[in-house]
Length: 106
Image: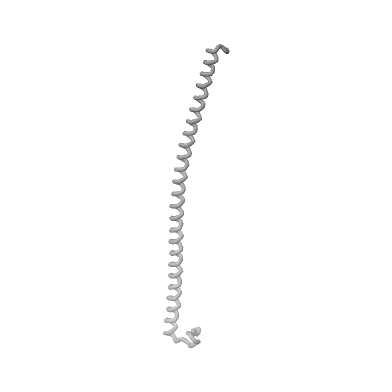
């Protein structure tokens, strides 16, 4: 059998060897468990950040849609205003033509 040595290089008896191996296995299991917990904590944190990012993105998208609707309404208002001005101009031209005919310039 191989000689296992404990702390300080003291040889470990057969009964002690089993206990020593168990303690090593338990330490490894504890380390694996701590590693898994850390990985899970990191994943939870990442998901939390992703949720927050998604909320911000959704809010930005809603604001963008709202701005788009407002701009579209403003565009329509301006288009209506331009059409009113064009109609006024056409009416003025018609009146001008009528007045010119009345005065005998045509």
